[in-house]
Length: 56
Image 1: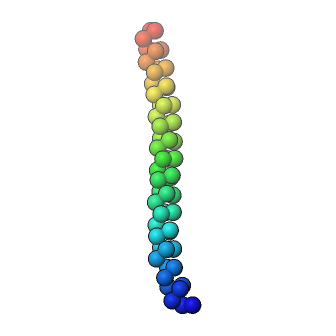
Image 2 (image 1 turned 90 degrees about the vertical axis):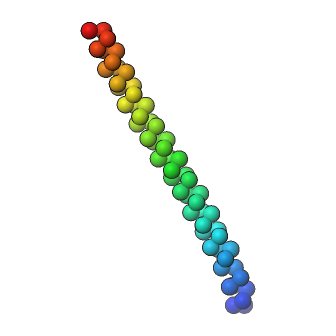
Image 3 (image 1 turned 135 degrees about the vertical axis):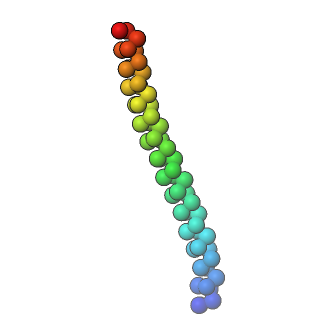
């Protein structure tokens, strides 16, 4: 009984590592998407300011 539990421990460790890696990748991709959204908003505002200056 104890021997079978000990043999399952490496499986749980590997599974935990895989889940942690997937979580990390998802959080990085999510942060990059949010960053890109903010940069697009900033770019649009700068374009608007640039167009106003060109009209003057």
